[in-house]
Amino acid sequence: MPIFDFACDKCGHEFEKLVKNDAPAPNCVACDSEQVTKQVSAPAFRLAGSGWYETDFKTGKKKNLANADSSADKA
Image 1 (tube, rainbow, N blue to C red):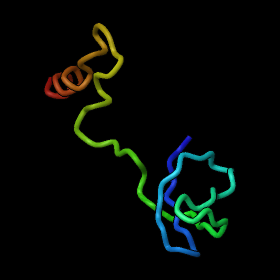
Image 2 (image 1 turned 180 degrees about the horizontal axis):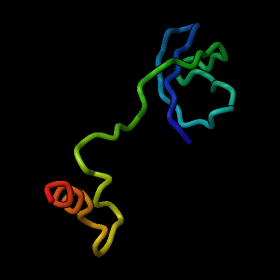
Image 3 (image 1 turned 135 degrees about the vertical axis):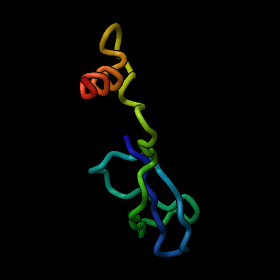
């Protein structure tokens, strides 16, 4: 389940909550109001870096595919 950002329309409190995508907005954690709006926010994780996917969960000859491809191009 993803973490969403919410803002209370009544008291202005902003909070995060772990909810299902299709679940209704939870009550405000500060004032228990039902007048809560889901906010647009950045994802909780970011895939960054060079080659993180290249060697993850690979074994044997498949582990260094980038080096094999670059040596084949030079020939």
